[in-house]
Image (cartoon, rainbow over all chains, first blue to last red):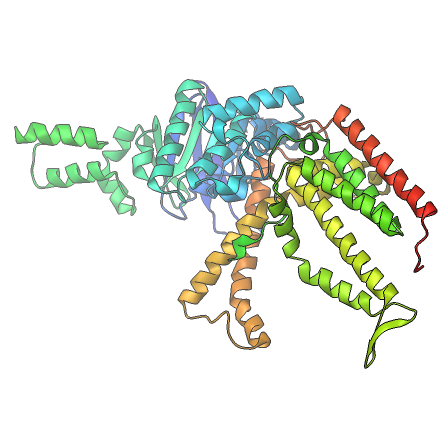
Length: 281
Length: 271
């Protein structure tokens, strides 16, 4: 898999001037992300995962170290708009990232900034709204929508710019379970059908399980990474760092601790049910 | 309670007025305002009033909506009317203490009330039939010549768009904060004026803080979507003048010229 984003030994401090005791939000992060990959970055509050998310499209610049997106350094001012065109960022609060008073006009905002011709914008807006399943709300005001719907509009606004990669910074944190499902299934669809690289920042382990690769962060460093199965089989390590594992994984882990014959790692409810019914037989 | 306020409410539709270009609507509104103050006699005022009713009918929006939009300023209209009532010169018809009501006073009062009511109605017709973004877009285009004197035209239009977008968001937030403070025992609606203003402070401070946070977030979201001011920006919806605007302009021109004619032919007895 080709590297799309390459993070090399990145340190970041919110207050680099204070030389006496510089506190780093990121301390030496190395990470490669391939084209078309679905990567989940997990960690508890203050682990640096959101800080890292804002580095991918040069909202924040590394205090030291480098990040390249398709070979373009995020510190390069001339490439700023090229990078932001490639890598879209969706924030946590859906209300604060919708600019216009009508859904379709908000989705058009990014394209308008890029100077896309009007006919082309119209087409892209319709396509993006269809991709997130919000086409019937095109003429609505965003205030009347639910949280999940607003977040999907925000995602459509990014897709309309036709990025190769979307970074989502805890997009479901402020949503109810229904909204969370809507957003998650939209994200998976974009990844599988449109082959858009997804970087999902989350603290819901159930969401991380859906990714191709999970990166666990703790105090500004990458603790461990690998496929969901590899990561969530290290229950002790995650627990030591005050991180959760999916409920199903935890249940099986505890049962194994009591001496039951069960598979080493279970990721979701179906696998859990299967494992338990096998045991009972 | 606060969410009852409908500011610049847009009612989508496909009437003749809806189909007009927003720029044409704004320009005609400005001419209208000039002419309503040029009306110097009852006949020309009646003419403009009929024209206004005609426009209101053509928007195909229920008359009740217009009345509701006027309810807010009813007090101001009546007050200006009453003040005008006592400021006429000439023979007093009724006299009581220092108040004198003259025929000219009554005349002026009626004039002022009718004028303000008509202005409100025509402005409501504009906001009812034009989407907020069309309105700001049109203003941006109309003010474009002012960019020569370094007026940040695009920035002003963008500020208006964002303000209109966030009015309902902030109203909802105010409601939430008020409820949160009430739940902690804040007494927001009793006592004298000073106490009430003081009680609003714990509502305003959180509202301010959260507005700044929102502003920071929104700026970041706009940067993520390559916002770079007005340079090289295109628009999805391109405004263009059509035959609808031409018809509207011709009709308005006819009405306005008959106002001038009637002003010359029929002199106002009180001026």
